[in-house]
Length: 269
Image (tube, rainbow, N blue to C red):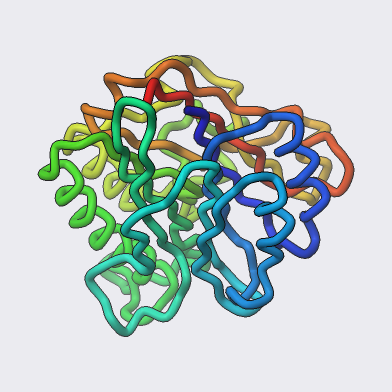
């Protein structure tokens, strides 16, 4: 089963780019982020015509996540548990039945966290975007613990807005004060991974030079000034089924691209 994560940066702006890629890559499941659309306005029929079941958790003009699946989606839930007051559409999950296994598939769009606002003691300013990012990651850790406890194949895939290591940025020195690379952000990510998750891409590919995002500014794509912030985390039961994981970086060079590219995971489900 081919499962992709793809921050499309606006379904209206990127519909043709997304469908062209789907018609070429034929993923079984797609986790989309930044659809930037309310549920009612999402062009689900375009994907249903291609054989996909469509589930969205949308928000006007911002955020928004979706799951597109050629297989039936069961037990769909929306919103990351832990804060009923959080109105940002950043989390969706469902169970997918493969030929031999069921898998809990969670799609996420983790908060960016910039600008970083800190108190004199270095703690995040309450109510600021960086505090929201770290609080969201605490809730993500709690959900990750629950997925581990279920002892079934499960994954969390999406735009994490986290640069895990220096080798995941072409110019890490440019990111030292950024919310994506600050020590607190990376520590929160490592706490989740250290629960027993496998970071799928790094389990198969080592070394620098592998990126999933290039800014639209300053010729970042042409200079290959990228960062790797789109990840799959797999429970041990899912990791045992992993066949491959690759970043499809060539998609960034196509017409009217997103600033992200798909990451494709293949599981023997």
